[in-house]
Image (cartoon, rainbow, N blue to C red; front, side, top):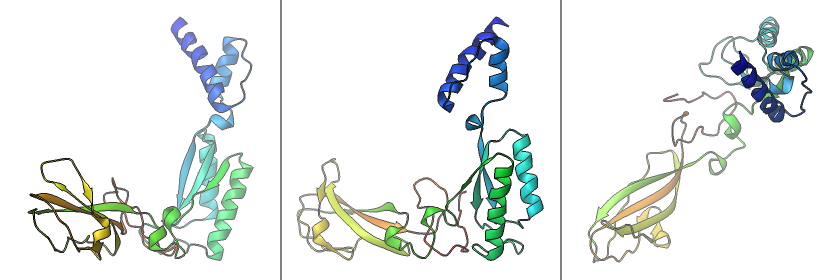
Length: 234
């Protein structure tokens, strides 16, 4: 029991420090009261998904009241369409706005914090976001050539809808030394490259493609709010 009291007393200052205002604690009973009923700023927030099924006032109230009973401190209203349910509300329709506003009012009534995620398509969605402003990643392709001579060849192109060159670099195949030839390329074609011995040619390009939450991938391609959500390997 002595160890339990010690752990409780140690945990309490850390909790008060991380949550803002420090609460006065004089006895073990006071410490337990603060620990078992933390202030709202210490409570967990949850992502609250909408858009995949029908959204109703009754469902909104039931969800938020259940969150409050469970000790949740707030919600992040997250709307996105995965499967195109026939009962789901169209994004930005009058009914969609009505349910969003009702959700905010109900959260306020129950003392829950209310935040809105920038959906659909995460913060990169919307037709106002062009490919050049969308989420991007770097791609590369290796080509092994023989040096000591003038070389002109077509480099492999990324299998993507939209991409553009960033740089072309060349370095000896058995060395970490690297030379940049970005000024000697045009539309993916090397115009001039003088080398000695075998070298590896690597091209680097930007690319955008509809893709999901996987390592190293661009998450979304810009599109209108109701467009399908792409999630391979999700």
